[in-house]
Length: 110
Image (tube, rainbow, N blue to C red; front, top):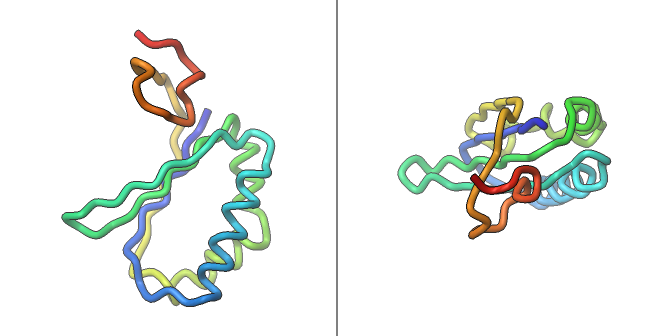
């Protein structure tokens, strides 16, 4: 499994941003191998992180190579004040089952 984390500083959004963002989210959710997503905001810095979970690098690559994703990447400076992407392989996941999580059923609680 893999995660792709997109951390960014918000800029000024417009209708085109919201339409493209919604389109990319729908495309991601339709890709076989998409496991789920989470969004976090750091109130101290104002940064937002979107974490997407994938069964394989191939599934993640499908999103990254999609024309809508490439369009957003090219236009990001219009809407964001900076960003960082981290792609990581999930080595292990566990929990007590007390919270909903996209990978909760992947590994039994320890």
